[in-house]
Length: 201
Image (cartoon, rainbow, N blue to C red; front, side):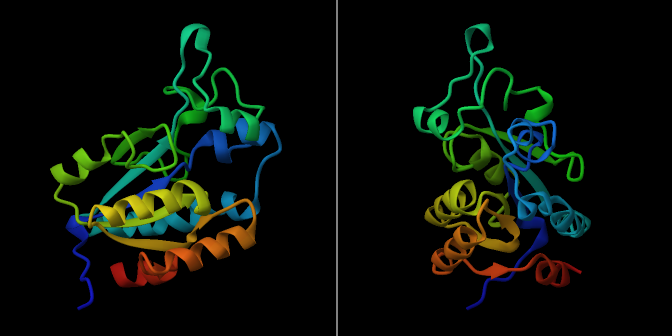
């Protein structure tokens, strides 16, 4: 039996659509780490967020966070520091410009800080979902093979119905994005943003 979406029990969850990832003045922009597929996401996702909210749904933004310590030195996992040696003080720090949701999507109804790939790992997301009686997540964001895939799998383990926006997420390499969509097809259905928008309107 197909799952019927009740917009009032549905949340759009975006992963890591932050200035430090997408804005030219953010940490990744300054380091020249960008991809056209990633920068196109906010404009594509915004109509879905608007349509869902118009039907009584919720928009939640999960934002990657580097916890600042003494002298603002961030806690960075060794593997991340090796992958992204340009990350430093002030990057992805709560309250800073780079940590914020991109203007095209701001403000979200709820914002959660996340310190790892999954938006469900050691965050308050489950509390928010239970408090709002949400049983369905529409998921988009970056990167498909990282935070998006980890969140989709964690949501599946918690018996949340998940729908992945196939063109509402992206990776730095198209072939990695495509392979991840293929692997996640056994976990959740994929819909384009246009298809989701049509189903909501």
